[in-house]
Length: 72
Image (cartoon, rainbow, N blue to C red; front, side, top):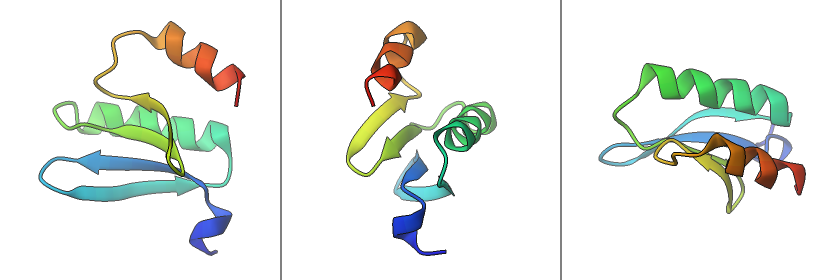
């Protein structure tokens, strides 16, 4: 599959950006994001669709994120 076919991605940022998961499905990407947060609790982990950031691991409120996902 090409990168364009997998728009949702989870990126691990410590000293550099590392794409650790790509998904074609929003729910599968979300599961990868949640897993990455547990595996790398000290790293900055954004969940993205292109330039749009759905959630970041350093955000405090998940209610705000759920509201944002409803408008996508």
